[in-house]
Length: 161
Image: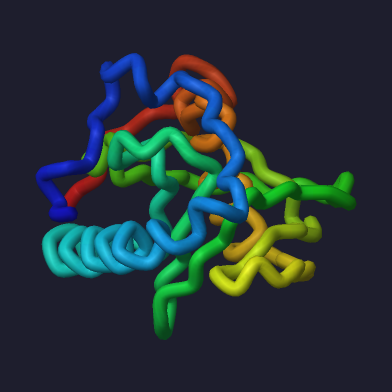
């Protein structure tokens, strides 16, 4: 997988809800996770941004996210819960519309349940930037884009490189 494989705003696949990953699919996931991590690194090299990508952004309609901060981490079938009432406002960006920023609100804190590549259950407590990032990625798995969370019609701006 490469940067050119990212599905861009306007493609109807970005609005589809993804199917769960099944245990029988684990053997096929490793090359997909490696490819997704590669795309993050290519995106980062070009745009100086990019920490995670959701599988549907590459046309893989499965509930899979790859987070790559220090090293790639596969997040399988994530579920967010215990979302805080405390919200934060930010300019959000997305690999599917790399030159556009969207002003929106996200929960400052949440927890995330998911499976790892060994099918082990994990629960992470997420705050601030990781909380908003995983809310963004989990939205992709539901077919929801950041633009749908925009505060108002004036909450868009071009990203200056």
